Image (cartoon, rainbow, N blue to C red):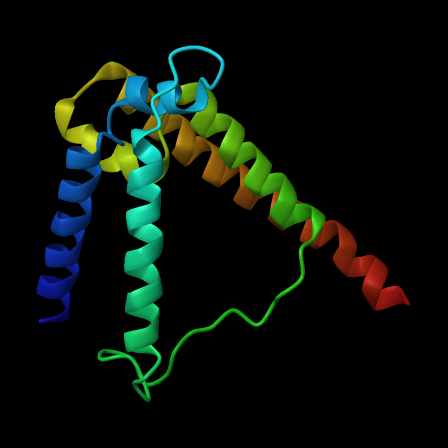
Length: 148
């Protein structure tokens, strides 16, 4: 049943992304082109998402636990650090240059558009590179912290 709900939610999300135009890189790039062919319509998409999330979180937090998990998995880290800011910056620049965010690119894979496929491959490569660099840095710092 959990898989069925996950699939259903994914279909709703993908349909919303497609109808909103977020799977169309030209529309996304025009949203960022404030000095040129600016298209403010994605601001309404973002506003709708914020309102929906606000209401959804209010409803969910009334529950003692999620439906399919024993507890809520809430991140404990609340500080802004260089890793978070760098990742967010790279994400934003990549989104602005390519016109895709992962949420829009994954449903757009169904179009078999070469640009979409290349973006998703670059996204996966970036995720793997991040994992590799993070592991290397952790290994590098491990002996230093053990010696102190």
